[in-house]
Image 1 (cartoon, rainbow, N blue to C red):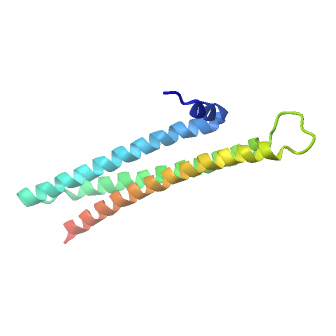
Image 2 (cartoon, rainbow, N blue to C red):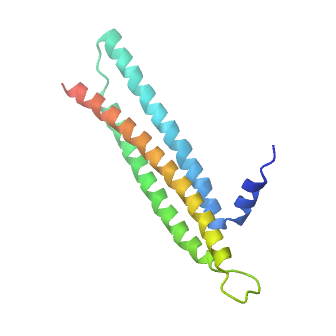
Image 3 (cartoon, rainbow, N blue to C red):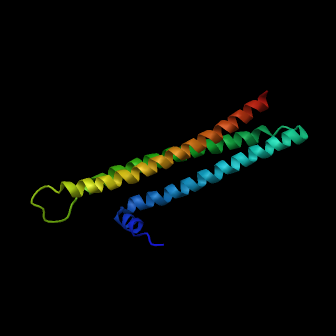
Length: 149
């Protein structure tokens, strides 16, 4: 399968945005991995509790909560880095090479449109990652409050 549009889009992005994209893929994979791990640990605690009527140790729940808190901080760092990449990339849209008798409005707007479409996708994925992290944190908090009762 040939993806000429994706290849040309990748080539037109600056090195700082390529680096951010690779970091963002890593953050996304880590978020999915950690969220799945935490949900599996909670599920195993729930099965243990039903079968043996045993309570999981409180330190394990605290550790899971701290890992999710660190994940929140990682998301915030990635969001700030994304904002930095946007601010660095916008002036490049106004650098147009060529001989123009008038201001190259079309070239600038097409570059800005491309950047905004890409940025909108990244923001959508950030929102989805936040929703996953929020859901898992709520499950941990609910499980921890059930342990206190």
